Length: 280
Image (cartoon, rainbow, N blue to C red; front, side, top):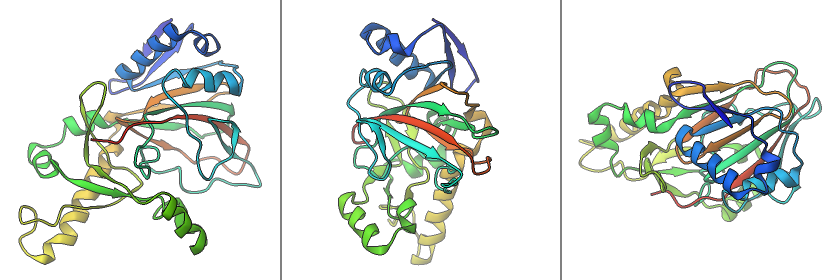
């Protein structure tokens, strides 16, 4: 197996390895997992695997979960399919960490391109450990111990009918997560912000607010600043999809952005999502 690092921030392409083999070889899958921890997102091309092999490989990392709003090809494999009759919704094209609206967001994902868009449709990832590391010291002091609310209702459920929106909120109540999370395997700190965050839950304290009028602009400006850290090119890697290409990423220390620069067309992606732990 050959490992080619793609940027100084994160990302490596693996060559000379078969995920069909790794699906039935725990030692090989374990080696790939260690490389994921090091590079945060891994890329492979020409992986002509079945949905069953896709799920079997991902299960070496942990148990899989389906998405409440997307169909599954087989248990554990979510279909993210765009067609001319189903043009791209404007939800994926925001920087986010997957499913932070869950009490326990995924630890990672394995995404396979079944059919790429004829033009465009890249995906970008950002290293949120590096984003945290390079914050000014006084910002680190302010956000130490800060928590935030994350919401499915306020993002892609907002366009649904009220009854459906409220029913889903009852099923997935908006959780509270630390703004600075610690990776459970490496011990490194990263920013946990992204497209599902709505507000800080413990900002309005004497430490941060002189008068009541400070609360709203102070919180909003800080939240906007922290979310903007994923925009920095020096923290990013960008991947151009091809048929049977695969990305494997650590959801606990990255954000990603699906670039929707393609016209209504067929673009079919299958994703295995690995169950994670409650952030701390």
